[in-house]
Length: 181
Ligand code: 5GP
Image 1 (cartoon, rainbow, N blue to C red):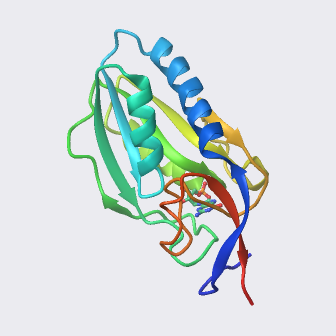
Image 2: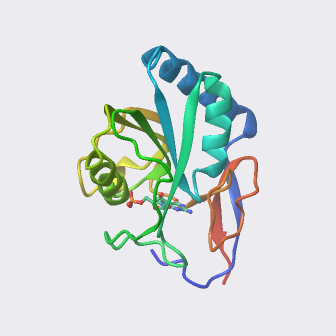
């Protein structure tokens, strides 16, 4: 599927603002219980997970450190190459920290696998991943995801921080896009 260079419009809403907020609260309750009393560092992956990270840390409502990494993603293409480029690495070392990686979508799994290996090489006390949307149909590599928000079919989604060619990140809901001819 190639969406390159084509104009897109919102087709239908997959998850409303309220449904996302309820899911974020549910994930936060699980994470809070699992990390109680442990020094937690949350690593949000830019740009797609910036809204999710902001909402999740506020719902967590516990002491934690926040860091971000930026990796090259689809840009104007929708097929992942498997070659991931780090545009911004962590600001602070994570050695002996309990690290929770926060991603928008796990699709083929290649990005998450790369990020896990990159972070594990820095000797954190533990590493888990929290992903808002899981597309299991397109998985190419088996990568553990400890916290999953919603499981969705193979459709291209936008909104809630997730873009199509830098558009639609501002939408408070998650939607499928339709291409215009
Ligand atoms: P993976 O390496 O698992 O194939 O890809 C993960 C990344 O691909 C996500 O972080 C996201 O940037 C991008 N991606 C996967 N599916 C979608 C989608 O439906 N919409 C958008 N905008 N990006 C997607």
